[in-house]
Length: 359
Ligand code: IPM
Ligand code: MN
Image 1 (cartoon, rainbow, N blue to C red):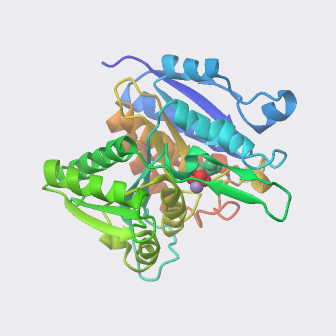
Image 2 (cartoon, rainbow, N blue to C red):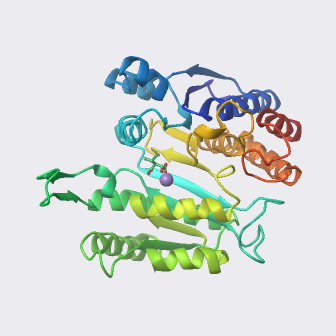
Image 3 (spheres, rainbow, N blue to C red):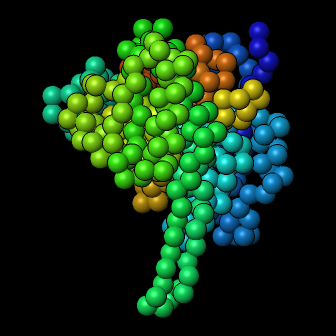
């Protein structure tokens, strides 16, 4: 019997608290069925607290999350009253970087009964995983503005790739792809997405690392390469081709929004910011934002947050519980009219209840 799981809950802004509540409801229900114990502690980091006090998050908070919790469940970050970038950089990216969550794992799965905008594509066609590097690239924030406000204004924003960062992400992706194949859930094909024809420096570091690591240590995994623009085209035209994708941060951000759309929208797309190293603290979240216009109305879809919970459980040693939650989501999606906020045919909390009923 493993020890009790300690979960830090960061509901955040907008609809974050509403969807996190439903995930916690499902957590309580599945813990009883699977017979594990856990504790939660909630933190009010986010826009409201920032506006009231100027406080975003401190090193001591990060140390607390790192030392005292096994995982973090995050609702949403982003507040209409706060200038864009402050909370995104100050809270979300700060946590990803400080906790060295170098993998952003975003499954793209079309669940049964979910409307797909792609003609003639079903759940058997849309089922792949995107492994996005999560600590480097344009997200490092290197650069600056000179001569601001003049006609000669110059700004730069640098793309950073390190061999270390690319390599640890690639190795995670190769291992992930191999495991999927061994479990009969994948074909052992890993696609690197980049833009090596234009980004000839960063792209080269990634491509060489991909080839070298693959040749030396993963000859059983098929290596495939797509330029980012072509990948966008294939996501729409032939999504069934993909098994596992590995991609640097910025391109990964973009293609996972496209991925979310082909799996039925932001209401259903979940992801994990993983630090897979021993003792690492990972953070799970719905991919969508804080949806201010739906806040407090009870119309937001909680399935993405519940999907994030499923990932949290699966990656925190409660594999069976995580799979059980995912199966319950699959049985719930056919009962909803739509995955979109306000059009589900059920309230936020009714959807949470439906999932609990299917556990
Ligand atoms: C995401 C978001 C974030 C990102 C923003 C809010 C900083 O779009 O999680 O994909 O760009 O990573
Ligand atoms: Mn994004």
